Length: 374
Image (cartoon, rainbow, N blue to C red; front, side, top):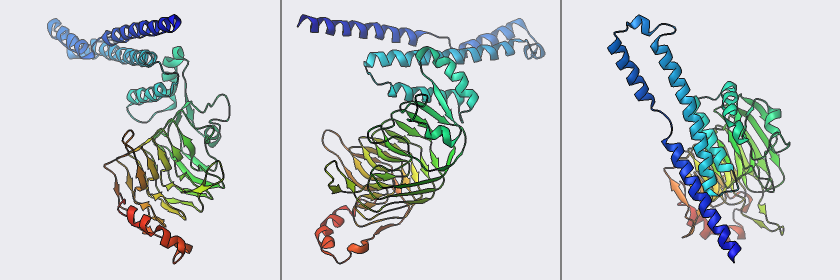
C-alpha cells in the first residue's frame, strides 16, 4: 500500500516539474515586432539613409537575419513545448506528438512541403529521436509497415505524384498508427481487388491520414469495410479527395465466427468507428449489394463527419445515403454530423432481391433510413 502511495506521490511530483518546465518554455523567446520597431527607431534617431539601411550588410539585412533566427528559435521552442506537454499527459503512445510535428512543419513551410523542408526540419527533430520521411515513389509507399525503416507508426510526407497503386497499407491486425500527409500530390489510379474485409489505400487507420488526393479509384471487394482512402477509420482523415472512379462491395463483412453482417462501403472510408472525417470530398461512384452505403462513409459509429461533401452516384439495397449510409451513437459517445452536404444521386437498387422475401423483411429498415441522405 505504501509503495502505491509513493508511486502516486512521485507521479504528482513529476507532473509539477513538467508544468514548471512548460511554463518556463512559454515565457521564453523574444518578440519579433519589438525587434523591428527598435530597429526603425534606431534608424530614425541615427538619421541613417535608406541606401545605407538596405545595403548588403545594412541594418535591414541584419533585421532579416534576426527574423530568420527568431523563427528558427520559435520552432525549436514549440517542439520543446510539445514534448514537455506529452510527458505531462503520461501517454505511452507518441502518435499525438507526431501529428503535432507535422502541423508545425506545415506552419513552417506555409504551403507545399519540399524535400529540403523535411531535411531542415529533421535536424530540429534529432534530439527527440523523431524523423519525417519523404515518399517519392511507389516503392517507398509500399514499404510502409513492411520494413524497419518505414514503421507503421512513422511520419510520412508525399513529395511527388504516384502512379498505379495496387497494394494496401496496414491491416486489421497491424493498423496504420502514424501520420501520412499526401501534401496535395496525387495517387493516380488506385486499383484494388480484394477477397477479404478492410479494403482501401489504408486498410485500417488509427493515426492521421491527411491531404491525400486519389485521381482515379477502382476498388472492388468480395467482403465489407470498403473505402477509397481507408477501409475502417479509428483515427483522423482530413482534407482527402477521391475525384472519380468506382468503389463497390459484392458481399458482406464476416466476423471471427464466420457469420456475415452489414458490408459498410464509402467513398472515403467504409466504417468510421470513434474516428473523425474532416473536410473530405468524394466524386466516385459507390455501390454495394448489401446495406450501409454512403458517399463519404458507409457506417458512422460514435464518430464525427465535419465539412464533407459527396458528388458521386450512390446506390444500394437499403441504409443508403449521400454522405452516410447510417450513423449510430450513444449517450456516452455521440455521433456528430456537421456541415456536410450531398450533390450526388442516391438510388435504392434492390438488384436480384426485388420481389423476394428479403425485400419484405427489410422494407421497414429501408423506410427508417431513407431520411438519412445527408
